[in-house]
Length: 266
Image (cartoon, rainbow, N blue to C red; front, side):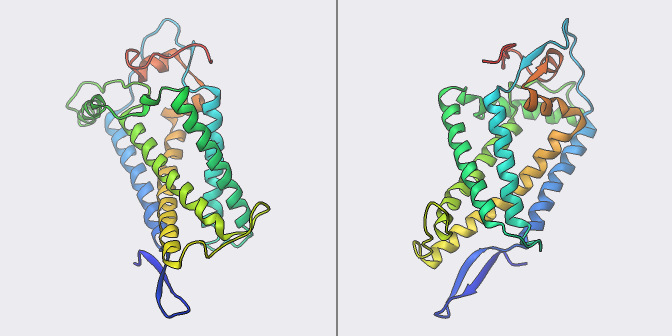
């Protein structure tokens, strides 16, 4: 199996074109393996016992409206980007370039707004990995293996959610930087193409980074969609649509001392 694609230029030199599309199936398999590991761990751990509360259905805010809008716009633009990038490679031929670069511009804008909001208005440190996260994960692993009576309740985000967030953030930033550079190679209503802005070798590196980041995003998106559709986690999907979770869900899955939720959307 080849890892990269090469071509011969007009001077007879071998030039890097990008990542091999054979890797598509390997990254798809990586996502499937991640799902399989989660299914196996959930089978061993069993369901978390529901908390006893006086008002189990009273709503508490988990995701505020701007954050929900960001999530769904980013999700839509990412899916359009993945579809328009890989469907032609898999044999579905159509005019994909315009939809691809427009979705890319949308992704750049929403990510820029999100970074600004996370830095100024949100708790930026909520997504930072802390030493306590590793202790929680170790205790949760012991619970799965039957060596601990129960798994600890995290704050708003557990270690795996934080690691997923930073992985997808780094990949999306890599896609954005390389994608913006690649815009120089296409004509749009706003600028004329300039394919000679970078030399052939540099373009090969840009395409390779872009390809590998896109392939990795496929695996992460597959796992993310699975987790959102898993029946015992439908409450997380509902929270991303409506913004709230019930008080029972809050006390069952989270430690109030580490995440103090609110009953009002500001």
